[in-house]
Image: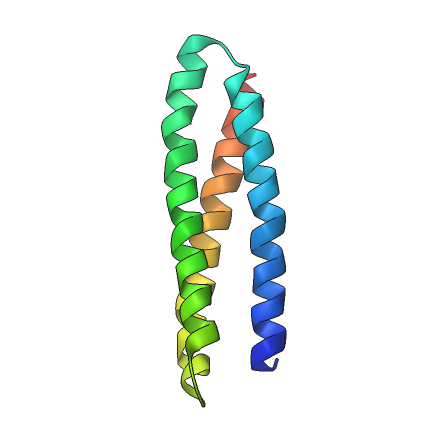
Length: 97
C-alpha cells in the first residue's frame, strides 16, 4: 500500500470509528447513574487512545521519504488499541443494558 493510500484509509477508519464512539457516548449518557459513571471513564480512556492515533497519523503525514514505513507500525498499534478498547466497552455496555 502506498503512503497516501495508507493515510487516507486510516483517516477514514478513524473518522468512522469516532462517530461510533460518539454514538456510544450518547447511549451511555442515557443509562442509569451507576452504569453511566462506570462507562464515562472508559469513554475518556478510549478518546485518549483515539487522540494518540490521530497524533500518530499526523506524524505520518509529516514524515518524509521512507520514514513513513517505520511509522506505520506505531499507527497500526495505536489503531489496534483504540479498536479493541472501543469494542470491549461497546460489548460490555450492550450486555449490561
